[in-house]
Amino acid sequence: MPDEENRPARVEDVHELALAMPHVTVYPGTGDNPIYQVGGKSFIFFRNPRPDAVDLETGERYQDVIVFWVASEEDKQALVQDEASPFFTTAHFNGHLSVLLRASRIGEITRDELAEIVQDAWLSRASARRAAAWLNAHPPT
Image (cartoon, rainbow, N blue to C red; front, top):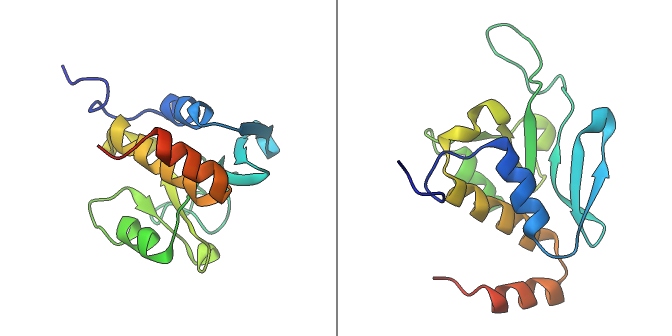
């Protein structure tokens, strides 16, 4: 049995990991989709079905898209250009520092990998002071 960090990620982990970051507030988005913010800036949100994210075979809008902010275009491209990665983007998000992930594919990454994505999303939106304090308390291993 895999340990807790290396097991497949679950949607519940997104909520748990986001809430574990400091200074987080949660706002109900449309359709009761939560929006996680730090200092008034969103870093993760659960997106409503939109015409830019659809199943290529059926044309049905994805019902389960989660948006994560990233620190840079390079970070975004590293996640979306990897063929094995479940992360993607759409033309709607061109120039936007975020990546998309379908909840139905979240198990393709580990909980530990998800934790890094959530932490990086938070760091990309937190104030410099809050980010520095968090990094100081959580040095890389």
